[in-house]
Image 1 (tube, helix red, strand yellow):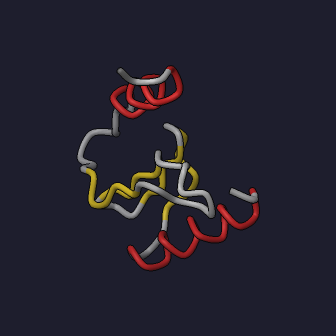
Image 2 (cartoon, rainbow, N blue to C red):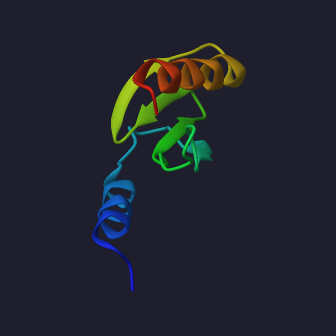
Image 3 (cartoon, rainbow, N blue to C red):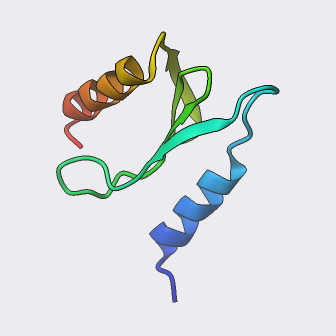
Length: 77
């Protein structure tokens, strides 16, 4: 049986609807120091989404991943 937080996270991830023409290029799980953040998605147009919110668009996958790491460090996750 799933705990409330786990089931809520699954609902949030299922709710993410990408704009037309975008597909998930990479979905990242077990992020942060405690490996509990798990709702980051990078699309084929290198847009970074964290918890259904578009953070920014980047010119490459590597830049998007580095921005995600910087964001996690900034938020103390």
